[in-house]
Image 1 (cartoon, rainbow, N blue to C red):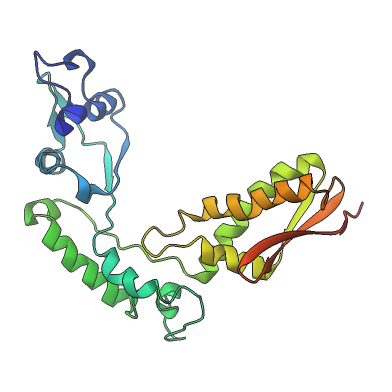
Image 2: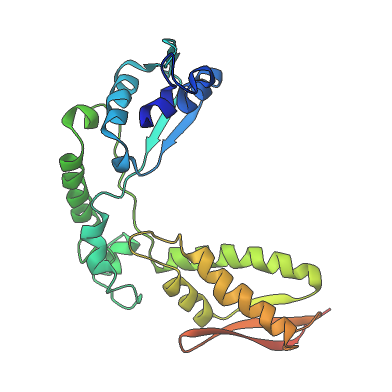
Length: 247
């Protein structure tokens, strides 16, 4: 069933005329980038199909047509080995622990690889990768890239980007938003998960900044023409009126 979604159902089955979600799109758009997210969760039959693509650059669909993948870039992501590193990282995400100032990797300096250096963490993940995937599959992959974990400076930059989007929206009602450094630090801390990275950050900004902004607006704390200052009060984000916007 999983494979039929990608290459299409065989003759006599429901969906035969529709073709596969993967093969049809590549057949029509051969110069494509195909992303398989969290590939380790795929059905074993998917890997059998992938071997044909990675080895021969082609895939036969449910109708017997050979689809050319030679001009297609295939990217696969995986979280294999992440838990072995993030179990210790989760205890150190306060941005306060620094292991080695000479380490060029920001996340490694902050102890986000479970106390390991970048190279040591990479070796752990590659070992786990070899346990999860067959040698035939791994040998057909051109390059394995171990991504660096997000450190404090990177997270603060993401906070700036996401809050800038909020600022742009509220500017239409005549209010300027400013975040204190403490607020940025707290949002980065709350919005980071060692296993999922900065994915929760957008949700945290919505709940801690946007929702609080709406309440402050309804309560009359802020109004058109003022500066709304977002600041940290202990473990909470609050908003106050920081004066009028200069003309």
